[in-house]
Amino acid sequence: MGPIDDWLAQLDARYRRDLTPPEFLKAVRALSARYVERRADLAGRSALDSPGKRAAFAAFYAPLHFLTVRGIVGALGADATPIDRLVDLGCGTGAASAAWALALPRVPDLVGVDASGWAVGEARWTWRALGLHGRPRRGDLVQAAERRLRSSAGSRTALLFAWSVNELGSAARRRLLDALTADAARSVTVLVIEPLARRATPWWDEWTTALESPALRADEWKLDVTLPPPLARIDRAAGFRRDGLTARTLWRPARL
Image (cartoon, rainbow, N blue to C red):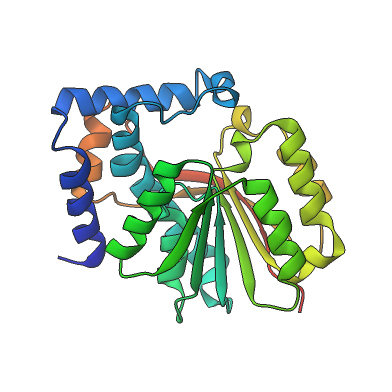
């Protein structure tokens, strides 16, 4: 069994032992509905507001994010970009940054920031389960990004925003964009990953224009990825009929 398969088995044991299969599938569907049909609720109520939804996120959606990021990083050539510090802003359970870190020839120092204390604990567990070491902490995504951008000039630092900018309010998102468009931010590598659906990212064109530079890439992805059997079984049972992993990205490597 490889490290990813072992991680999936640990997730299954960690999160599904207290839920029957119907209960887990109900939570998977409910979390999907929260992010799609009931997206307007996110500003005032966490999507992870019950044990079932937290289990669904950690044991199903986070591994999908891992696989998506691994595919994107390889396609962008981000696995060849030298990085000493990878800062995962809105880290969730740490799966996205883990995928990028494991793809690099030299594992970087991992830092995670999330507003959820539960997520911070899970990021620590995820990194440890995958043989990584890092320092996740609870905090405000935008404030953390501003601090990092002020202190990281000239260093080989990458900022990762994986499915996190879409959950910000408009004022916080504007602050973050202002920070990322400041001249000092050009010396930091930035990767923004969001859902392909424009309903979740009505601000995307504004960000693409504001971040415009010769190095910027804006892409839409449909990755032909064979899901590991445990994830494929959940996907089919939940009725999703997924034929690929999708996302959109903004990738801006550091200006040397």
